[in-house]
Image 1 (cartoon, rainbow, N blue to C red):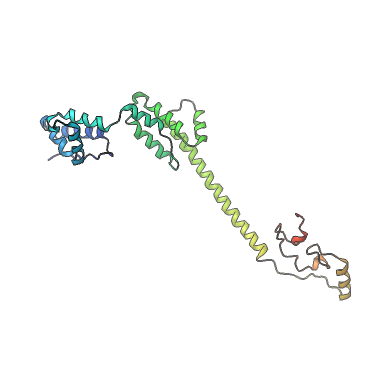
Image 2: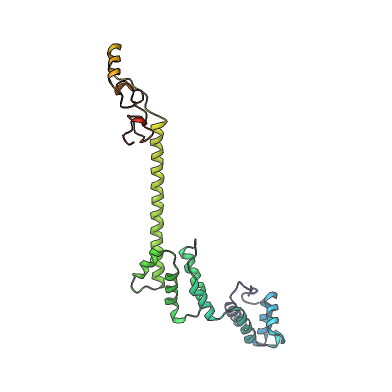
Length: 251
């Protein structure tokens, strides 16, 4: 009974080098003899990949070649050159709507094909900073000493988190202010305080005399301001009580 399984290779999706590495370990752990390596490869790779292999091997047949030759033929066809992979890596920038975590994962995955060796950390750090969309984060990283890829990611994610919290706090403040404003407006316009008549009472002759000699500061009518029925309503210009729009001081 065999140990483990090897699925079919998915063209344009799977990494051929990684697939071959897994297959080699499968051959070892199951103690498959060398003369059966080619038949095993042809059996597990899948129909679509085998058809491609037949085309690449013409005029020979795949079974006429060694395991190493077959895997190398497919690798040269499926895996672009290291230089081409590095070029794509250098062009990779953070996309609109892409989170820092997604951007970091994409760079790590692309770097696997670039064979940076001991320059892996430095290459990822440089591309991460050059391609990040947030200019504030980039300038902060420029000012850091001895920054590596791990530290750059930590600083960037910390700044991003603080920015999100500040934005959320500002949005909450706007909502509270708006609700308060609507409440004030509703109170001033829709629910004015009920009119309360003044405490003073004069005779009709005295009242008429005062009305003729006084100009109301609320509505400009010929009566005392204290008896104006419009005093409790809000001005349509400044929304304050005590005067109508025609007498608004802000005009």
